Image (cartoon, rainbow, N blue to C red):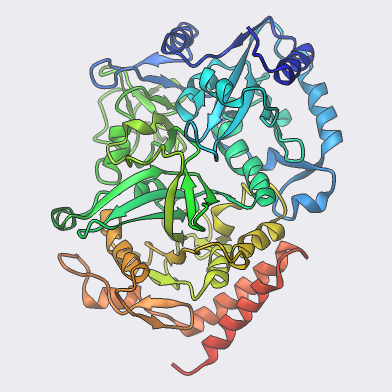
Length: 587
């Protein structure tokens, strides 16, 4: 089979010439095709069927032990000019890398099937959605892409005879970690990944297209492609607001997207709904409002630590039609298991495929074990999650993990200050984590590994939104769920109680509450403490500002800005100077 698109057909043929597959199959996205693909993966031993009563349509899978996560040191932005990749990316000259990859991958699909996977990122019929193609020799990738994107005929129909599709080539190769490459060519909208079969490296629609390539496209066309969840909050007065939120890893991003409010809030009529848990494409509507779509169709969630306590909606999402990768397996019940899920079964097969017992002193599930589940199965999914127009954004939230310093919540003074908050966002190691206590890792907008071009140009692009008079800018906030006391106890209970912070944000957006003007931003005069297991002293600590610590932080932020190259807008240094000056003013 081929398509009616001559440019597409020519590209597929040209790639097949050097990849040399034994046969080519064009994916149509049908249920029959999916069933046959999963049966093939079971026969090959890649998939183990799970309990048809408790996990219908679901499978357990294991990756190679050397292929269990994204590989940032093997990920490249390939441009003509190194400056266009900037100081936060690994750079390679585009022509040289293209030649190198063609040489490495020559004949890599001999004896294998090449699957042509058309995929649509974004809702069907949305003017903001975009089409990509992944040529892959991995049936596992096809099965996962079917969940994570809208694949097959729907993408071909959307593309029609257009030629502006993202071109992707992927091969498992022989999983040689020394020759593993994840390459992005933003100037020609191409992706090449080799010698990996793991999610973020091999499922090209995810981080490769939806963030690295899309961020460069967004820069050119005046929109944003961001590593952000999207949630909706409905108040007892039936007003509804949507927020985009960016959190670095281990900061509760998916939990926040799918939170269940406390009983008192539910009884009062509050409601939280999920549009997306990982990526937001934010466009400017004809009315000047910012609108966000979730370009994905599924969740590629971290299994480890997910439980009925932390995220019951995520567990419910993964109860059927789900692929579990690198969890443990309960062979008696034919169910997946991981640390934190439930009491440990008597017998387990670990993520390496071996019989496991607690006496071994190892983890049964890999810490980065994953579930790939359809978003449509999430109990909290928003009715508008596939709206072609997207959902209107009232607020943008940034948040890192800081045991001290950062207050529970603050509001940016204006858009420029909000960009500064996102740019300097950081997470700090604690005594519970490996490494030195208090070590900072700054993660601009939670996009450090995903900005597909120069970080200075990226910041300038964010700032440009305030210069476009037609745009109605949302408020920007910063949160920190992770303040601890002297014993290391988390002061804020988190999870569903985070709605109390959203409640204050909504009141600020609606102009229904005042705020304290502090050196670091606008802060609450108080948080709703009704039935909250936090004392007045706890709240005071969560909303406290230690000026001496903040002076040290301001200096650290200034040092960080200097590492971002000469394209970083001067406005960010100005914001740092303003912060330093405000910290010297009398309280």
